[in-house]
Length: 498
Image (cartoon, rainbow, N blue to C red; front, side, top):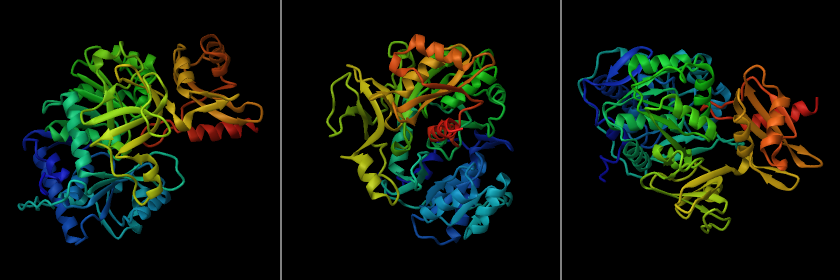
């Protein structure tokens, strides 16, 4: 791999034909020619800043042509892209920016007060009006990079006290992208309905994979009304849909996704957390002509690490599959030694998608990135054929009456109760039990806490039955649509003292 070909920004813009649609956003459809022109215009601005190679440049925007062109321009000029979620509070965003020495930004003013606050604090700012001028006839040169140079600093959605940013290299993105393209068999004819933010590693991988093959992306930049996703798939004849568990739970609960035939869909992707098996089955049954890929990933491994082939969904129920091309997954003990099939240990990943570690966090890097691989923080086991089953996050286990309780086992049982659309179990400090199990659930009218508790008593072992069951309007989600169990633990603690 020579230095020019190592630049992932150049690679991602190389496949699409000028006349083909690359991206559809709220302003309309944009061809690959338009995307290239926009990227060139923004790259030309970056070159006038005369920044040292590897400088961090922030992207703060809704999913759009501007977001994609900004991101690609940063990569192609040899700088490091730092995507920021638009839902961040201004002070939180500025703390993160200072942490990675980021004082230059591409900003969409349309996102409101946060944009204004960040723009006022930044040294250099570019907004979408740069794209209103005439296109440049000259194509800026692509900066040479080494394959293992940082391409992106991607903030994790974890709950550490200090910001944590993963150093994703050009090689990491290329390897992860090509692996996903391979097992999904993506082609230039595909068009994905995008509901995940590009500032999230899973959302960014949707951009990477579809640009890589010259396919297109249709953006739904609001999920307030889930029916808009169904309408977008119909309008733009989308062939692919990707979501996290909350995406599919909301589509099942509050849209016609389960009753409206969407014949253009051929691929459904689910990652970003574990979707309970009954809901996996429900999603697959909604659009039986589409192939549902259950996947597993982490920001620390660029995006995705494993997938379960759709034809094995019934045979390997509950499994996240095996490693994607170029990644191997195993289960290890505390000493890093592989354990026997069926034995619970920590899931360990090795391969070209595993990143270099955390920005300015040598201790955290040394803890998680071991012997060239990644300790994922997930506990699971491998069956005799090497298919991995996740038991729970280490941090989410509940220790009640001296027994380690899997929150996922409780949640799966509750989801089986008709009318329940989402559930999350957490532990609350308890003098007698150590931790009392508190279950939060979302359900249609008529499903009362006593109904849920009775169902748990009938379907779970005694030590798994929640001590308390609480109905909640919605589970707290982060910017990427993942359940924030830290918030539920705080809610359980506060309400218990009232």
